[in-house]
Length: 448
Image 1 (tube, rainbow, N blue to C red):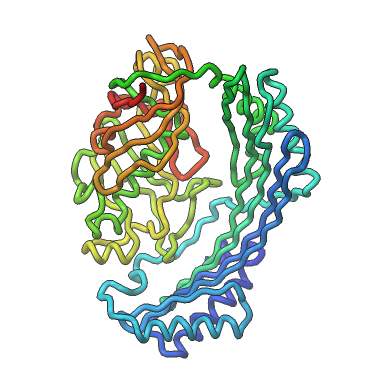
Image 2 (cartoon, rainbow, N blue to C red):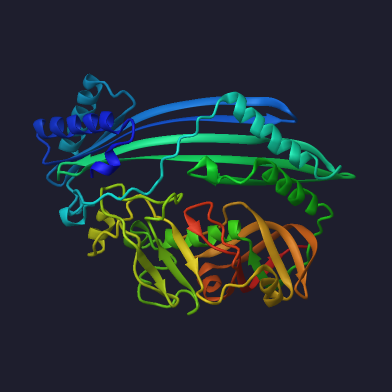
């Protein structure tokens, strides 16, 4: 574990966590765990060439969980001084002594703990001054404003840089930390034609500032997207194929992972209840979890309980292989942790040999709706019912013909997943879920 302990800030946090564990055991806890973290960042927004906001952020925190047999107590603090830490442990212990027993409570099984901590190249601090950030944001916005005379206003160009250092330890002997960074440049612009106004945006994000796309390119894409939405029409109510661009398709698979989370399963609050071993997607679709991708935005050598993260084929030939579990939900289901306490790590949607380039994808669609923006939260995780406001572009004979707005698309996720007919090669890696565009055979469009 030495490799992950060399980043600046980790040794100090390891001292805090070690003190928590010693103090909790001294106060009578049978098991304990703690997570200490510090984060800092800079955010700058420029609007119409003028500085709109400059924000410095520096946070720190400590979470303590103790177990007295099967009784659990938890407390937290932002003060990492010895006395504050001691008081926090005392509060957690006091809570645990009075809570009801939970037969599933406790730390992760020792054999699941990460023993070798790989260096995933997640820590790339950016020596970014406010002046430099302002210049990048200005460059980004100016490039967007210059795309077309119809771009008349801006919600701003924004630059963000964050660094987070966290250490987790428990009374099973696990103690390790990771430092990671996240940087981004974004732009949101408004285009106007007569009385009509349309807004759109674009962004780039990465662990390493050297991997960010050029700021002026981000601005130009944001401007082009805003202008492309001018002249938007409404549609009449109908059924039609629906395609989701990669950034919108990510939400579909987020609903999928939510449905196969252990908590949703043991609470019987999932539209994919007891679905392990069944056909959920078409046979050409695979879903892989790859936690150790260097510089991956969701890479992590261990989960929130110290369990080792591992490569996993979550969906094989459309069949769900299992659930997304931490230790508590695993015990509730009579299963083992999958190293997913805290979520999934780099989910990859793949269709080996069948991913379509952009034109082939539209040709396969032939006629239907290409969704580029979704609004509202109309997804029912229990029933799978799906209904969201949408805008995008109408496609006819494989050609984008005109922009569309003020419509609602509706279906049921179980059927939508089975009705996926194509996935594009235009994979978006800017998040925890990596997917190309997704084409669904038919959904309902509610319009005029």
